[in-house]
Length: 264
Ligand SMILES: Nc1ncnc2c1ncn2[C@@H]1O[C@H](COP(=O)(O)OP(=O)(O)OP(=O)(O)O)[C@@H](O)[C@H]1O
Ligand SMILES: [Mg+2]
Image (cartoon, rainbow, N blue to C red; front, side, top):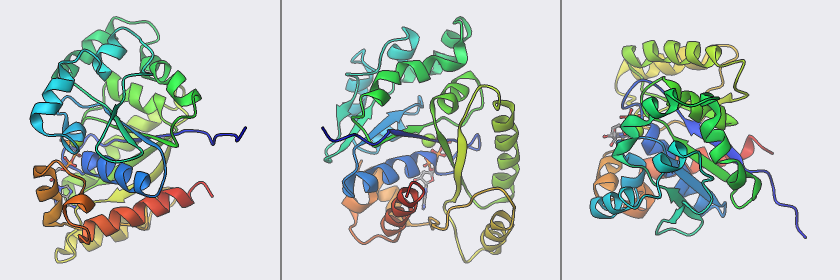
């Protein structure tokens, strides 16, 4: 029997809100699946943005109310096998979220070994070898839940928006990752420069500052500001499904190829 490659678990984290985490998670997932990889997306945020990237509001709310969401699984420390729903795209599945996720910090607070709950919930899914990638979208916080997301991941992708406050947030993010050193093996796969506007000098400056820092991997691929991103989200579709040749869709394809090369 053919040996299945090991499932890679990647999360998208940055406590700076609006840095492009959900957009990157959805579109990298879509492009990896379009390249023939089997991808499971995990919506770890009560904002439900990852789910809304693929399904209309009514469907997302119905899934949230189904009782088979990430929140219910984590809360009861259940195995997440069987929680995934098929998106409209081949090779791309999703574990939905619910707005009840706002209570997850409180739920975790009362548990033992509380940092590793999500890791354990995902264990069978990972070991089944059913997926090449599991991509987890994190909320813009740095509490026990994001600790769980990082502990469950092998690698972290940090999307950063080039702005003074974006860079300030990055320092917090690295401090947080350092603080988890004893309980997590997750490595930073790369900083992803998102929403780059070449017309603004701060965009160029950020790129230079980040790529010039030793020991911090920065993806060669960058995602420029592109109006198609917002429109595609309005249509609940990945960018390429909304506009085939959109600049950002091409950039996410390049990012998917770059991610793949990391394991070659
Ligand atoms: N490349 C882009 N071009 C234009 N708009 C973008 C781009 N990337 C993201 N956006 C817009 O910026 C906003 C924030 O993006 P997104 O939701 O992906 O960030 P986030 O980090 O997940 O936010 P949060 O911290 O709230 O979870 C969204 O309205 C999205 O449409
Ligand atoms: Mg988000």
